[in-house]
Structure formats: C-alpha cells, structure tokens
Length: 130
Image (cartoon, rainbow, N blue to C red; front, side, top):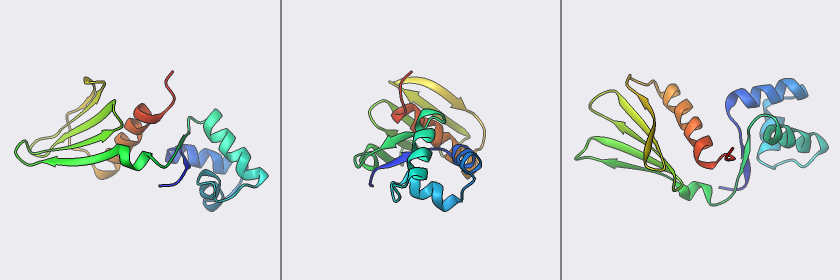
C-alpha cells in the first residue's frame, strides 16, 4: 500500500464542501496522485484541521485479521497497541488498547457499524497521540 492520508468519510465530505471540489479531486489529493496547489491545500486541511494522518507502505502489514475457530472469535490487530475481538456466537465486540479494554459493544453490529468501529480503532492505533 503506498503513501496516503487516512481520513474518514465525514472528513472527506467536509473537504469537498470546503474546497467545492469532486470526490475524485479529494481522492487524488489524499492518495498523492495529484500535487497541484489545490491538492496540497486539501492534504494540509485534512491533516491539520480534520484529524487525518499519513499512512506509509508498512501500514498494510500492521493490520491483520485472524480467526480462532476453537474460541469462535475474530481478532483484528492494528499495530502493536490496538486490537478488536469479535465473538461469533453472541453479540460482543471488545476493543483493547495496550492490553486493556477500551470499548465494549454488546449488540449486533451491521457491517457499516463495524466498519465505523474499525475507522475509530485505526485512529487509535495510528493517529497522532494527544
């Protein structure tokens, strides 16, 4: 995976509004496909004002999904600090940061809800530490 700026959907929508541009322009800017003045402004705003952060080549190797058949769970690890454990037999998803439970969801998550949780976890794992 090549260098790009990670930003959630809401942030991308704000960029489109701020710069009155298309989805394609935002994509080209955040993936460094364009280096125009507008693209540089979009990247700057994404990082400095909307919480985006740069991901380099090593990112894809740091995000791993494994399935534990005996425990009936799926585990996703994001770097060394953060992981999600999702139980297959009952509605429970737990997020751990540095080995401590940080978030618990005890309901059935739709795919879009799980993806939103992943976005949140990616920010915890790779975003700037405040």
